[in-house]
Structures are given as structure tokens and as C-alpha cells.
Image (tube, rainbow, N blue to C red):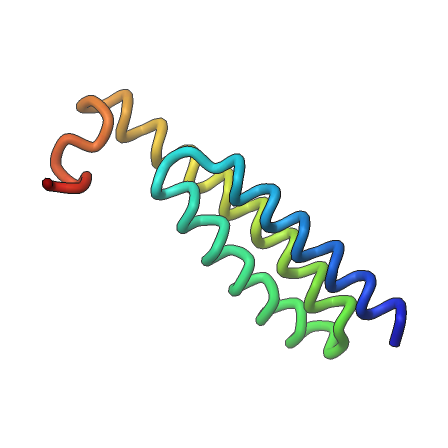
Length: 88
């Protein structure tokens, strides 16, 4: 039980660290969506807490890269979010 709690705390702190480094909105959504999807997939494959936490960490990293690429593509094509950004 102690190992599972320690691994969960490590995964949560890693995810928060990655989310703090995310700059664009797609990158932030990518981290969250990737972590949730990775946790579900890890639990389905492994069926225990370690695989769920590992899946969440790997999914968060993949989602971070996918979101970062989308943010970079939006920036290169037509400036930084001219049409889908916040309107004040």
C-alpha cells in the first residue's frame, strides 16, 4: 500500500510539473486528455494502480507533445490564435 501511495504522489507531481510548463492552450488540453486516456488504457491493460499511474504519466507526455505541435502549427500558419483565442 505504501508503494502505491508513493507512486501515485510521484505521478501527480510529475503531471503538475508538466502542466506548469505548458504554454499554449492546446498543450494544456493535451496533457490533461493524454493523462486521462493513458490512465484508462493503463488500467485496462494492467489492471492495477502501478499500470494506471504509468499510463497516466506516459499519456501526459504524449499529450504534451501533440498539443505543443498543434500550438506551434497555429502560430506558424496565421499568428498566435487570431480566430480561436479569447475575445474580450
